Image 1 (spheres, helix red, strand yellow):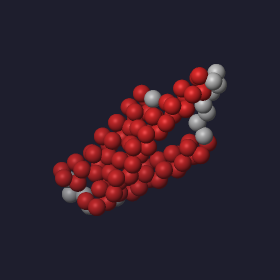
Image 2: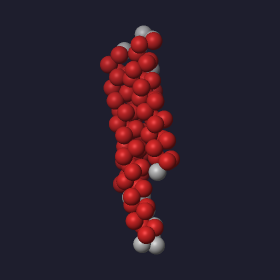
Image 3: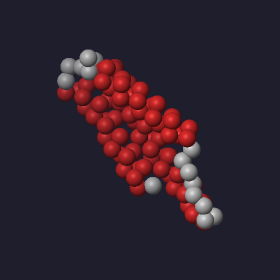
Image 4: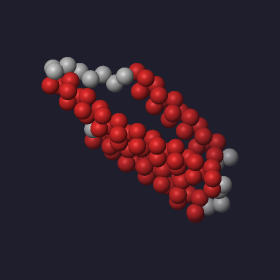
Amino acid sequence: MLAWWRTGVAVGAVALAIGGLLPKVSNVPRVRFEALGIGYGVLALVFVIGGSVRDRASQRAIAANSFAELPVWVVAGLTVYLSILIALSVIAFF
């Protein structure tokens, strides 16, 4: 759970930097970077909430002497979301 939360905090810092700080200290289109900040903020929440959900699933699996595998749809969804967010971040600077 700590790794998920740590990642969520780091992504939250990126959200604040891109969506809040960057538009204030440079001459970049404000709306574009605020939208990216929201996108990264949503990702931060996914990691924090997902970490808590994953922790509960892992605890139940350990109690049942089993393993809580991360569903493929979660991995695929995060991969697609991150890929789109990264591409939009690169595009936003041009």
